[in-house]
Amino acid sequence: MSYLEAIILGLIQGLTEFLPVSSSGHLELTKAIFGDSSLPEESLTFTVILHFATALSTLIIFRTEVIQILKGLFQFKWNEEMIFSLKIILSMIPAVIVGLLFEEQLESFFGGKILLVGCMLIVTAILLLLADRAKNTTKDVTFPNALIIGISQAIAMLPGISRSGATISTSVLLGVDRTKAARFSFLMVVPLIFGKVAKDIMGGDLNFESAQIGQMTIGFIAAFISGLFACTWMISLVKKSKLSYFAIYCTIVGLIAIGYALFFK
View (tube, rainbow, N blue to C red):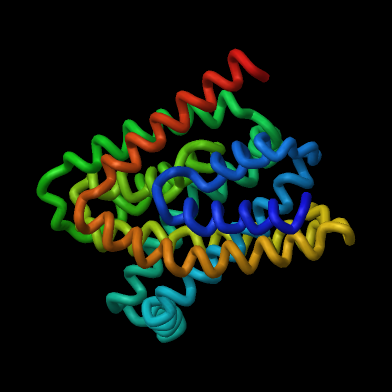
């Protein structure tokens, strides 16, 4: 992987992590275009690094909310911050269960599964279209809603299904206020990413090759900076109900990926 390819992959991750078009799916498609020959675990390592970068950008954007949540947790009081924190924890449970029980199966989906990515992008497009037409989105996130949104996040571990698209769409379809849906979606993934990185580092699962450290670093920086802009932009787009444009985009890219996988690969 060249430095230019690492920068492009970083920019794609930073933008698509927050925009509802599937960051993992776009990374897999871009690697295929570049002719990436990495083993699945090596490909996954770079993907995890880029997700870690966008998690940090989320912390920067929502630093006030994160500080309030942490204060609420450690005060051990049944207040708004504590309730919100518990909803975040509840939403993480499905993804944690799937990640622990089906880790090897999930890793096998990365590394050139273009047909799968294309099909899952079509699924993402359908979710976005449904959410864009949802009415009466004025509610707060409830505990049952948090669990359902968490299930959507677990399903979105498949490359091609947008995590933000799936969780925000699910929230909106449940009647949650669009701005609150985006806020909850972006915050709920941060603990999972940090937990995943910590687990892989301690378990020695991440494959850091000395020749790739520079590329990983530059990719990390690109993903972090682009993520800062994309996160802010996405909140505004969700509030204005502009998800249908992304549905069209996902459909086009998904069909191209399916065609490539069936007729040219």
